[in-house]
Length: 316
Image 1 (spheres, rainbow, N blue to C red):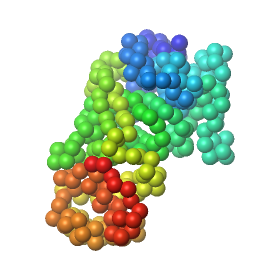
Image 2 (tube, helix red, strand yellow):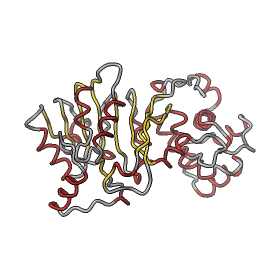
Image 3 (cartoon, helix red, strand yellow):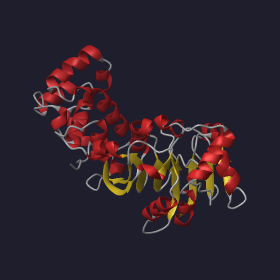
Image 4 (spheres, helix red, strand yellow):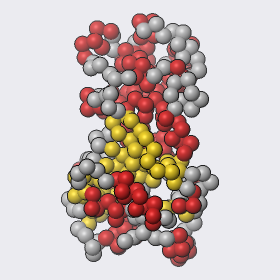
């Protein structure tokens, strides 16, 4: 299998004159027992039609995915890593390599063989349809990754390796110090749980902090299919502005946005009316549940009568 031990990784990096940088999140799994545990966590009640692995590096646990799925798609932007995977797999299983030009022409990632290797930046691609998403996310891209995942979500579950401090934000609830945009997004759209604690010694180079393997599932109190991609995107745009002022009374938040970002009201023209109708002028966002903030976003876009006619009830 393509798994590389710590010693093998060091030799590979030396021969290619590549110096991985922890500060950029370039930490590679070098723990075979951990890879086996992740493979066990990835097992579903039945075989997946497709698994999407984002940032496989040198394929530490890619081999564990093939018994679980009809097809595996890996997205890797580093040419050394993707070339390593190509060289290893092309003589073993049906493999295709897709370039960004073909994807741009088609508008999607074609999954024709057992393994599809895409050498490109995940953030520049349409997200391939996959029932399971798995990724060891560089900490520098966690927020951007969660946003893209939320906007394009069409999966049964996701398994993500994150730094522990990121999970603290994901699990934070109203009135807790770590309550951020990430808390609201994950609290509204997903149910999350910790599956494994991962010591820093499992990686090379060794990061300064420990990590977690977490699972994201669609919120069981929310029918995510009823929320269009456009509506999800609207919520993310809304949060990026209003959560800057999460400690302020919302009537003051309105005034601050009016002064600093008047274009906000082109997308959310009824924000001020929504505050009045929901009696939220003296409320602060850090005290509000994700569902309440989403409802405020909806009312900020639509008049009350339109909202009642067009929106399904949202679970809290």
